[in-house]
Image (cartoon, chains in turn yellow, orange):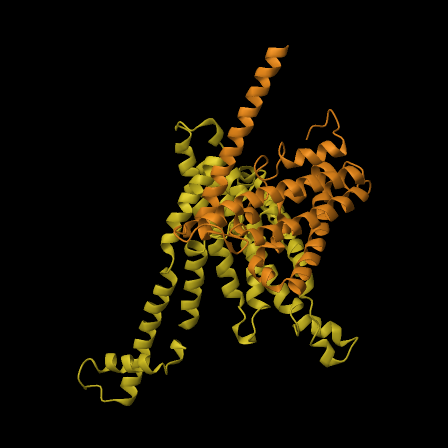
Length: 273
Length: 214
């Protein structure tokens, strides 16, 4: 249950609250360059989402099994050369940036080959966007975020698993798609507006993006509210179960609620810590 | 860009500052431009980091330009850049820990900063070392000035301070929106409009002068 809540929170946060484009400013180049028509924007958004998932999978795997200190593969390989204690301390995180860039370039290349072989129509509609994705900061940003949650945590138990990493990548991509499609819709209308000559092009796009970003700020706090609601529900369920175990089921209604309130007050339930 | 007449190193240096300013004119390298400009100190650190990476990457690319294979060049550029970015990142983490925390993921994101790849592709892979270095310096100065102008507006309006010192009187109601993400988009958009306006004015008066004297 807690795991599902975690996944849901990561998804909502990546797609809406901390939108990659409008909150973290990554992927601005395609956001400004490829947001002239809605269908192109949809294609770009989907391509980015797809590559982001693959790159997230690769970077999570590489980080967990090779890069972090005490990772499985590096420990095994280093074990042939040095003592086991030294081998479990081998820290390759300094290589992470180069490895991620390689992973992204490779996944873009593979996606391009795969799509060209099996979906020629889709390949034609993606056109030049696919190779451009290699230098899309949003993808590297997703990899770095995953790395900070795998290698940067103090407690190994807090490290993200593959499900969380893929959720972040997929919904981050969806958030990018939402932002770029809204932008394309606005820009199609902007073509009919009388804009001062000096504001035409990127300048007015940036101002519109500022207004959009302000609108997306309205989502701030949704995650904490959602967390509170979901966790209190799960606490309620736990309390009900406890009640059935420990108390007379036919006791006065409201006991469960009172019990839950007591638990919240004393903060004894593990969900609340 | 202009391949018909080769600009001298000095011209390339000057070109980078205003006529081909990476932020205002070419609209490149937007992520750090928007993300780190809520205070001047962070913006200047970022400009320094970009300057170092751009200079080193341009020089290395220029030195190996005869060995480059056309279909592999982008990969070579990105790996060169990634190496220097790792150096900068470790340096910042060692000597300016607070700043490195504040800049966060935007230092590694220099790897995919389009300015650097663009300069490697357009200039360094075709020109000798001196020209490439002058080009890198010009672009870096232009980039630093653009970052400084945005950070100046955002910090002074958002907090009433510059480099952490109070400059506006205390009656100034801090426009918190300016240091939040929307402020970055608005400031950059309006400044870009202003720069376009000034350049259009300048070029139209130049045209008039040229027409008058001819």
